[in-house]
Image (spheres, rainbow, N blue to C red):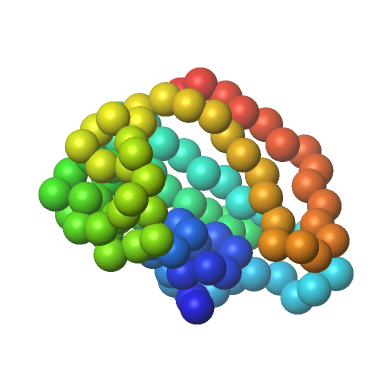
Length: 101
């Protein structure tokens, strides 16, 4: 499923273009959210852009596995936590920075 690959907004928007480096090489991912507008860049290339809390956002969420998760629509979840995850395979993270914009 393309929307499950690196750089994608998981299960909602597939990264395009696919700019992931081969296995064994590091990837750089930057996620920016300012005033509800989010961009995801992989290895210096913007691969996803969307706006939270709009009718389009609500439609995308309703078509995803997150439709029954409280707070994903209706502008409820405007703050919270940042989580890093994997799916049962070895994974490494480095140089993680979080900044207020």
